View: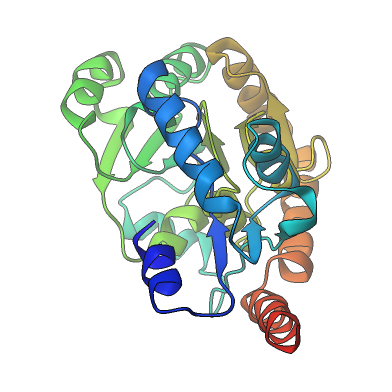
Amino acid sequence: MLGRTAAWTHRVPATVHTFHGHLLTGYFSPAMTRVVVNVERAFARPTTRLVAVGTRVRDELLEAGVGRRGQYVVVPPGTDFPSVPDRDDARRRFSLPLDVAVVTFVGRLTGVKRPERFVDAAIRLSVARPTARFLVAGEGELLDSLRERARPLGDRIRFLGWCSDVEQVYAASDVVMLTSDNEGMPVSLIEAAAVGIPAVTTRVGSAPEVVLDRVTGLVTAADTAELADATGRLLDDDQLRQRLGDAARLRASEQFGAARLVDDMARLYEQVAAR
């Protein structure tokens, strides 16, 4: 809002706004959500181009009456890791045994991300897999309540806080789980794929555009039991997990590299400027 207001006030001839996601579900009360929707509708009308990080994010915004289809361009995120860390070195980095299953959550510990689903799924998984370990990388207001909820797991779960070397976290993992109620296109899933780690994700936002169901990972409903069952399937089938991880890494390098993101945005700005 501030950026576009400044641009229009100074008569900038073209404006481009990127929706990295949206706040239309899971963030505010119904009354406040209506306010947010109305503001987004009003600000979208005079914006030259609207960028969405995924087709589902675009479609959800259009369904809410935000912008016109012709205004939108879909530009997925892009990221690169300099190299894939060695699995055993990453395990030693976090004092993890080399021969146990490791399941990981990476994200903000806040309501819309539903990290309690990860903890509950971990408890279910640990019943049949008592040696499995679980990592939570991230910070947020739910940290204390999650620690309490995870007490049945004892030292089998680790809360790592914010990690600057998140590629090491992925490399130490066998499966990454995303448990959210609302997402744009989660960069955490792209990062995991870049390291060759398959993911289990809820069917929200454009997450299924990163994790292709049964191709690069598994997609489930926003349900703890389904998340646990899908994760257990990957942990129990080494060949399936390796196949999905290899496919995820290949697709990440082709579809979600930083160079592709820069090229897409440069092309968009050039088109807008020429017009």
